[in-house]
Length: 265
View 1 (cartoon, one colour):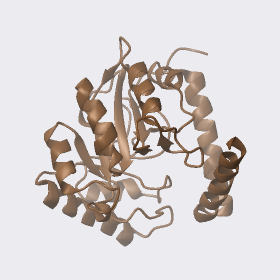
View 2 (view 1 turned 30 degrees about the horizontal axis):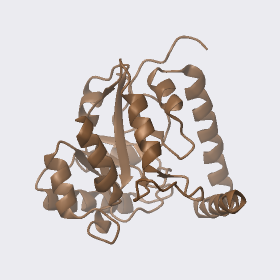
View 3 (view 1 turned 90 degrees about the vertical axis):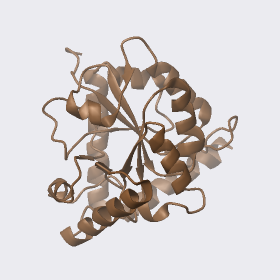
């Protein structure tokens, strides 16, 4: 369907099942089994594709480049994602909820420092992971200013990147992120990174259980049909959130996922 879209892909993962041979619960759309993640990595190891650092993609984006990013800071970012990326010599970018560091099932400072020393980029996923689509500027400054300070103090290095929690941004949010000293802000809007991309409106591709290895390959190839379909579904989801509210939308999605899990059993 037309010529391919030129650009680099940034994929956004969230969480993984801790046990290697355990399937992911269908009620949790953003939790992948380790087998699913392995299949994704194998697909992305194809000739012509290259795992890259976020900083490099933002500086000189090119077709075939991709970034593996991870939101929330679950402990499986270390036990599963970091371990598997290190085996392949691939970089990754991990966005952490600052006030969750050291909490049960979350990354601690030991893991984060080891990951940073191993070449992984560490960024902010806010202080408390709130909905920010209607947030006032002071709340946004607190969420990303305080989280930047905490992460930099704990890591002993600068934190340059941030990502949007919960999918919906307040108007003008990118300008506030820039004001706080970040070099880029990753959103939830699907698309590819090109030389025309605003560094404070960086698109990413959310990865879910239903995401197939072929889908990842199609995105990296710049398939116009795949990107257009993804963008259409994302736009419809945004309308749904606006109609019923973000919290209500999350509840409805949870009910539907639980129903799907019961039907499978």
